[in-house]
Amino acid sequence: MTINAAGATPAFATRQVHAGQSPDPATGARITPVYLSAGFVFDDLEAAKAAFEGRGGYSYTRVGNPTLTSLERKLADLEGGVDAVVVASGQAAVADALLAILRDGDHLVAARSIYSGSRSLFVEVFARFGIAVTFVDDSSGLDAWREAIRPQTRALFAESISNPRNEVLDVRGVADIAHAHGLPLVVDSTLATPYLVRPLDHGADIVVHSTSKFITGNGSALGGVIVDGGRFPWADHADLHPQFSTPGAAGTTFVDRNGPAAYAQYTRDVIVQRLGPTLSPSNAFVVQQGLETLSLRMERHSQTALAVARWLETHPAVDRVDYSGLDSSPYHALADEYLPRGAGSVFAVRLHGGLEAARALHDNVAVISRMTHLGDVRSLVLHPATTTHGSLTADERDALGIDDGVLRLSIGLEDAADIIADLEQALEHVPAADSTGRAVFAGARA
Ligand SMILES: *Cc1c(COP(=O)(O)O)cnc(C)c1O
Image 1 (tube, rainbow, N blue to C red):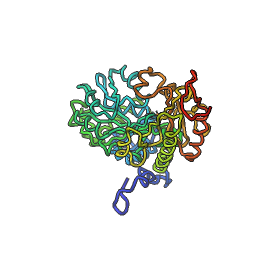
Image 2 (image 1 turned 135 degrees about the vertical axis):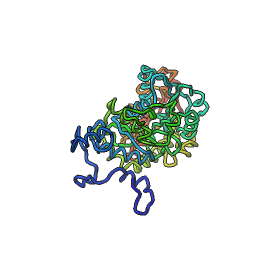
Image 3 (image 1 turned 45 degrees about the vertical axis):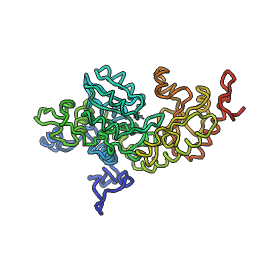
Image 4 (image 1 turned 90 degrees about the vertical axis):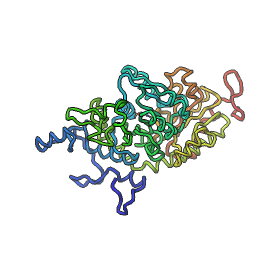
């Protein structure tokens, strides 16, 4: 965004409203309109040529569209990047961000705690294209990241806050390891949003989001984005990442033409345009509307989640609450360092009574919705072991700390007291003893 009249860079709350948006040049409309047009007219042959050579003007919505450009500018600004590419979903953002870097024979190192859809993408799809992956069990163990790197490794991938256990990434620590090997760090920051942490400020090179979650915030539209930090020295590591420094038909490279935005432009022109996951301008408009209130929502989400997590921690049916905002969390120090504005609103609660206890809480909530989504204005609950993590073996689930007693909560924007009252009445349905008659927790309803 252009600097304000006083010459200072405006604060986040101002930029989330104004960045990337100026009144529509044709009509003066204050909000960027939904340009639902597949194509754009060329004034003459020279204009058509210029559009096709990427020298200005729109041609076809899969290549670019003013509604999408406006959202890309706002998201790049809020993340502190040089450019952004919006796509149809978070899943497309993860896939395309990495396919711009990886090819047949390459290797990726990823945190084991990543979103289950990303995990399946790597082990079921990337594997078929000859791209191998190694998972790091404990993302806060920096030695494990270092040891997982091979000569074929081309990228490191992790989430700034993981789901469901709310683990916080040591972005700087992992970025330093990546850079020492000539590799970019790609961070999925869906659960944090740029309001809680900007991974690029801490050394990450590329940030991706599912905008379907907190960024839109109202649970109404899917979307995704890839943000280029613009600082990774691709040309210095052309042996590892030749695609950005290899001359094309015109004799120039992406680094020559796009400088610090070489990665973003390559991703847009070569990967997204060819694979085709174009974001609908209608969805972009909905994402844009949500984004304008992001800071207010994230503040409240985080405050309410902390209140709910603190209350749950004291309940006798509860064994453990995994929320980095709590003093009891092993990630509390990392949260203090990276998440001073709050730890988000998605966390896990483990009940003493295993599956039957989880089922009782899950099936008896009334304010909270049973849904596989997160970052919604509505509070949501999900049982990972039978849903998102249902295709894993019991050992794999154990490695992630996700057993039958674990529920995921995504705390919404309802009143904190109403959410707590809902959990309290649902927890009254949790049996005090298991099927053998053994007491599961003290002080429960008889
Ligand atoms: C939901 C999610 C995705 C996938 O996003 P979609 O928009 O559902 O395709 C990727 N990463 C994380 C962390 C997510 O929560």
